[in-house]
Image (cartoon, rainbow, N blue to C red):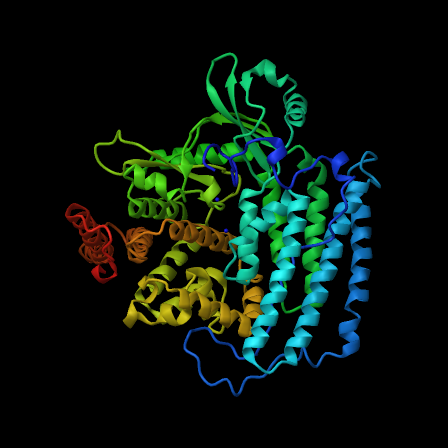
Amino acid sequence: MLSSRASLAATRRLVPTTSFAQQAGWTCAQCRNSIPTLRKGVPSLLRANGPTTRRYGSKTGDNGGRQDHNYGGRSRARRSAVLAATGGGVAAAAATVGGSLLAFGDDIKNSYEAMERTGRVAAALVLCINDYYTTLGRRDKVEKPEEKETLLKACHQRCADRTLKVLEQSGGIFIKLGQHLSAMNYLLPPEWTTTFIPLQDRCPVSSFESIQAMFKADTGQDLLDYFSEFSPEPIGAASLAQVHMATIRETGQRVAVKVQHPSLKKWAKLDMNLTSFTFSTLKRFFPEYDLEWLSSEVEVSLPQELNFECEAENSKRTKEYFGSLSQPLPLVIPDVLWAKKRILVMACETGKRLDDLDYMDSQGIDRDEVSATLARIFNEMIFGEGAPLHCDPHGGNIAIRKNDTRRRGPNFDIVLYDHGLYRDIPQDLRRSYAKMWLAVIDGDMEGMKKYVNEVAGIGEDKFPLFASAITGRDFMIVSDTNEGGVMKPKEASEQKTMSTALQEGLLADLVQMLGQVPRIILLILKTNDLTRSLDESLHTKQGPVRQFLILARYCMRTVFYEQLEEIKKRGSLYWPPNAIRVFAAWLGFLRVELKLEAFELWLSAKRLLGYKNLRLEAAA
């Protein structure tokens, strides 16, 4: 689950590299021992819990009746005891790590680097917890709302900056954690999410010598005996792996070789323990912000992502699924030649980053068409019968390239990389999820409540919050169908309103709610967030209308197939009562199809007439 973007091989957060000396955040152990330790930063996910009044929408009322949480009422002794208490946490962390080191063997036991790694996380955790406690105490003594907000924002920024330094220094799993947190703008303050964005371009690079040694250990063969050419410098580096260009000696085929960072094997268990310790400590001091579900998901997802044999199977399965569609999509998945647990050799499929707007514009690639194609690909993964779901579709895992070979259809290919984190959505959940989205698009409040409960077990009291989390929109917008609902273009003021609402008491509710929903829903939420971010990075001109019409089409297809299945249980489809039922179900599907077709015709007419800058919201 851990991770809010390169273009040339199947790996996460691929970043073009130049030389090893230019890579940030990666220093050999011997050199690092001579550098003073920076004792800052830790994944602290705290936000102030303001007034207890819950506000899900953007329409505000009188604030006079609001009651502040009793941060100011906490005894001074308790606040001043935070450092002492968290100092005990550091000791607990050391004990935790001591136990973990036994699993690594004598070569790492009592090593300076392990203790440095542990102390860095634990010390930063102390600083962040104490910073928030102190800031909340000062905030309660301030009268003006503007000053309260300024104090809290400054605290968020300080703690985010500390955390960023720790994540960069620790690398590996911690980089991946920061990448994922940067996309959680529905949960974290903007000071946190924007501060972590640079982690997308700051990944460690393992030395060529360490890669050679790992290849020999895992395959029993020297790297340069199998490859006639192997680029010493990677074309891209990610939190868990890096990719090199190579040529197979026997066949002469040019390939991309994805190799795991050798150091991950040494530190993965310790880093997972430190992650769990961090979130459990945060829960201890801020029980209303229980984020242990994040570390639980890490424990499940990370072993899968570290097993490249599993990634190879996911890749082959996805390629077969999309290759069997009656209406093919312009999706390219690199062929896998062979895989070991830490090594993956695949065909080289190149492309440009999805946020390279100059490339698309210069090649005559319509960004609106790219957006629509991405919507079709990921809706097929969510709603297709037997389709596997790619749960990490960030910008670094997707590339685009020009393709003029088709007579009809898009003039580009979408290249999808990194198939390590996949899930299968159960049929019943997929069908309820489709009905939930249809209710959201139609503004059917009762339908939304019903299917949100079926999908995530969320009751009426939390349903508006879940609706906002899954749509990324203010609930007042979602529920206001007279103004277009979710199809209404998102404005900057709406995002500010949502951030304010979280700050005014909703964050604790959101954290607790996400801890209760099934893990598959968390991954679907993550996929929604990442694909929404991809779409926003394209800066399309059409607004969200087309995206939701495509979504509605896949939802209606899912519901239509379910209706056919139910009708078949009653007997032959040609029996008159059943034939009427089939016709009624088909009409419902046709209604959405005609809306989408009409919108597509409008887009075609716009292109033919040359109205490139025409906003299309009114067409819906």
